[in-house]
Image 1 (tube, rainbow, N blue to C red):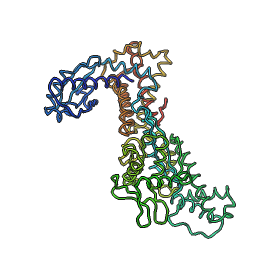
Image 2: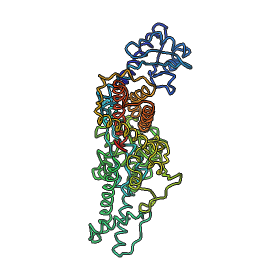
Image 3: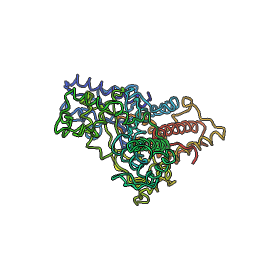
Image 4: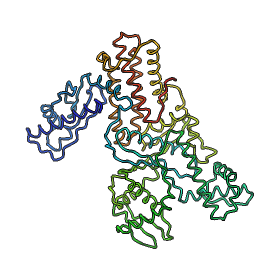
Amino acid sequence: MTIALKLQSRIQQAFEEAIDKAAASEGWTIENMPAVELEVPKEKSHGDLATNVAMQLTREVKLAPRRIAEVLIQHLNLAGTFVESVEIAGPGFINLRLNNQWLYQVLRDIEEQGEAYGRSNYGQGKKVLLEFVSANPVGPMNVVNARAAAVGDTLANIMEAAGYDVSREYYVNDAGRQAHLFGLSILARYREMAGLEVEFPEDGYAADYVTELAGILRQEVPDLLEKSQDEQEAFCKRWGTDRMVEQQKADLAAFGVEFDHWFRERELHEGGYLQEVIQFLQDAGYLYEEDGAIWFASTRFGDDKDRVMIKSDGEPTYLTPDVAYHWNKYRRGFEHLIDIWGPDHHGYIARMRAAIQALGYPADSFEVIILQLVTLLRHGEKVRMSKRAGQFVTMKELLDEVGKDAARYFFLMRAPDSHLDFDLALAVEQSQENPVYYIQYAHARICSILRQAQESGIEVPKAAEAQLDLLQTEEELDLIKKLAQLPEEIIQAAERREPHRIARYCYELASSFHSFYTHCRVLGEEEALQGARLVLVQAVKQVLRTALRILGVSAPERM
């Protein structure tokens, strides 16, 4: 555990002990003990850490929060915590100031732990299945899929760093109506190329890539039309979706996203899972028949109305394979399920959560992150649609224009539930206005400093041997404090499902380094100070690389 997490834990423990002692001495009755939460104040003048626990106790002990704070401080034992002063501020905040010695230990931790710095066992190995993207295999990836890929992959990285056992999964919807229409569209273009008169399917896929696929299919399977009509349709549906899945895998790999498992919907149908889940819910008493259809009594679990699972014609609704799929996830041993869905699926959450509970699992073991849409802009103007893909800009087109690093970072700059305006012109600009360039330039500048030191025969001393207490300027101390925040930032990002926190952290760390570099010379100083600053610069390099790796963004050594 890093010094920052140890220190936070020790201070929280000290406050908990102080509350117990205060309650005993003052006769307080506390039925609901509040959690002691520590945060870094936004204003540096307010100290290094602050807690509002006195304000949280007001309802329990019926005293003014400032009075509660005074009593807590009387019983507070902060020996061995690096805290040098405690003060009450505002309506009852308790602010703590630390001496600099803990910051120097941060630098030693980073050197000792290397790439492991920032990682923790917060998640205690809990098995989590994170399902994201899961676009229908009927066309190329678009920019909304790209945002889902960046958010899902980064969230998985964050949760792994926080000690969760995370698996990434892509659900291939290759058995529904859209897959069927896609196969019919390919077959229609195939027949046109064979000189046959064809009526293109209503609601079919008319974009250029479908014609291209039909051309490839004619080369690979020239005798397709010799099969029966049903065989042609079935073949085109399977061949087309399989071909699109391969393309989607390639596009995602270029984006730095790899899945542990690609789960096929047709596996559910072929394996009898739909019938099995229907039988289970029937036996549990959660299904009933009405108007020839089979209904799920989802209102018993908080849904606004009951849902049809089997239509009167005997065909399953969209809900049925989804319920079977999530049941399958639990049966594979996962304890917590996280799905990333688009904004048009918000109303689907309640029925799925109802199904989860009907299957016997806790409602809070299923979680949905709603991802808002993306608007592509260039110099403030909305970008035209792709000619080849039809109604959308493809992921590949985006990556060809701005590259993987800029694409991933820009998708991660905003909270998932916020609409995102993606400025293509800014994403390729080599200036401080481009946050990706700004961050990567900080890393490249550090590498340049370390190369110059090596070329001059200057070695970076070990942190344990350097005179780190020479690091006293505001810029130096602020930079170390920012390094100290990484472990807690990762935990908070994992707990709150906020990958944008790490994107923001990278920018703030780069900004803090650029400020340090402007005010503090590294090479050419007196030897002891030079050595201490080299240790600091080396630590920034390590932490910046770690945080960028979590985002899936590269850390170039030259720019």
